[in-house]
Length: 633
Image (cartoon, rainbow, N blue to C red; front, side, top):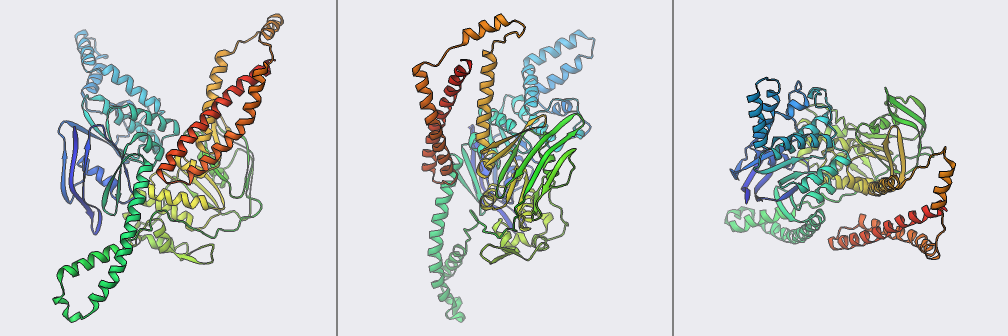
């Protein structure tokens, strides 16, 4: 069933063209992700499909039998409504039945109550009410009587997301669900739950997201918006990268040919200028087309910076026995850590456990209740926070950057101008001379990021840097951070970003406990899952013995006591020999995957990684079983 058909759609703002003559179709069951840099028109395209924006030209045909539902970055709500009342503003038959039922409970008219119950049954409102509460619970919204105006920005986003997901289930109709950055303000558990929910739901989805693991898990079609065009890629994020690379290689070959032809045609155009009107009009038109191709810039992706970092001394940063609480809520308890030169640390944990508080304490923006902080004299912090950019409304982008310095130093003794540095982070010449107030939300985040990096700090602190950043910018940022020689702390829920950058995890596990884990984010999650599974098995198998009954304790210990058989002892020796080998193989494959872009090689390496990980997991579980026997003996 066809949901949406779009033909030759064009949209521009002033002289800036967002997209030109693009065409596409959305069919039932499609799960599509849109990938583009900020300012390319992603959000505008979604609003056109919703009827909230009007295109300059082209046609949009939406099937009359479907409902289109949008989860937007801008949430419209009445601050005086409770969460429950906000959820009930949905306009659907099951919700109306639910409201009618709750109203009838205040009546003494039994006939009215019976009618309300009948309506609930007809429209399956009982099921909807239960599902709505489950969705809110999964998104950590438990107080349904709280006023919307008292919630944090992240909580409001989660309530709005719950309302949207409820709306898609409320009517038994064909639904096109449009979501703009749904994973912002969600912790990892919420993101994984949402992945699972969208995978199981029988919906058609159009999604804008920077979360590449989420994208890969949920979507099987990628739309790439670039250079005013729309390119369709059927498959995973890796397929999109491969297709893009092939297209750009072909384009580069075309540009080389065009440059040669351009030089010849330029000579021809310059000859006999007075006789220009007699020249072939078709040849003149062809010249301008050739000139356009020859001057195409394909260097905007995969850019790198070899920059000259401010000197780091021997002392970096050391935290000693830090405590921090708010009332009865303990965030940090006797926390100590010494940061090393070049260390890339990821900080993870649920919302509200104290991650941002730790960042503030490190920089002296907030005081610890107890403990000591020693910061090296040469340390220059660069802090990318969630608060956003501070700027003058009429200030131009280029002037804002030049206020820091005219030039950015490189390690080879050369330098980049402010304009060249802006281009590295995907700000074209036209945008550089535009007022900051005219930038999109994502472009402002990108400028904020640039503002931090342009100051050339040697200790970077990023608090949720990936929110509202586009994938092209994230690729540039990741390449930059992989080369960064200073120290780095990242707080992020973006699993892909963390896996690619950090090599050390500080995990906030609640009640002030912070776990120090060497490895990337996925390795920590894998270890944590194994520990939780083992903990459950241990609880199930445990047979408590009363300490005040020594006879029973002796009998229980005697019944468990035995030695390893010869076969088990030999098995343990083999396992202990092979486990380090498997771990080394796994580490090598992970390193290769981090630097591989070829789709076939990625697929092959992923298969090898799965096999090795499974062997390692089986060995670890069997090793634990044998160790338990040894311990009991």
